[in-house]
Length: 277
Image 1 (tube, one colour):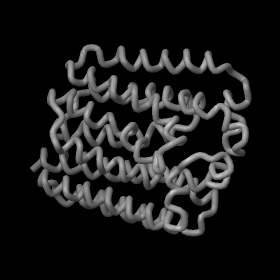
Image 2 (cartoon, helix red, strand yellow):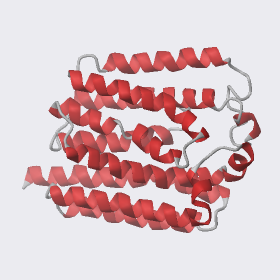
Image 3 (cartoon, rainbow, N blue to C red):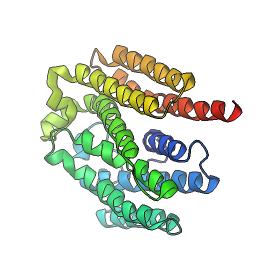
């Protein structure tokens, strides 16, 4: 479940928090914050289990993943599937008191989480699919607050997709040699020698989309300050990944927690400022 490695949960949680605050004009209910936070933990955990199930025949041959429970044969595939199903059921129970649209969207979220691990067999850039899966809390948050999913939610999801391609390409750069040997597909392999440029273009696209959202919502200086901080972080990531060395690329991936946090801080602080004006 990777509860000892919370970076994946945080990368799911930040865009969900962006959506919760924006869809509620900066006043999300404590109940929804609790439901979506716990749901994020449960679904990320289920996604990790499904990922290990899908990769159980590949992970033993990758240095970074060889000691995972399924790869090391410490648990059986059946046990993994029971755990993933149990986690998904708990997440579903959390939202039963929400509106019908949110419940309907949860089935799409479950499909995305369960199917993503298998996309590395046939999609050239499975990271884009990951961005949809990791960002599906966005339309669900809008549905929970508004009872509908406006175009703004899909724009926010688009920003999350480009961000996911950026950070997960950094992650894929760590395993590129192993993935090539195993015949798996990743954006790091697809982009080839343009991998670093592609990462930076995706960061630029993310910040550009978020800038447009801020303009449409008439956000103020604090929101854009958050984007500027995130921009600075993306430039720091460039310094880490330009040499394409494993450990610096992994460090850049992990640092994306602060990229997402900076954007959330800008959103939250801008709403706080407006309340006190």
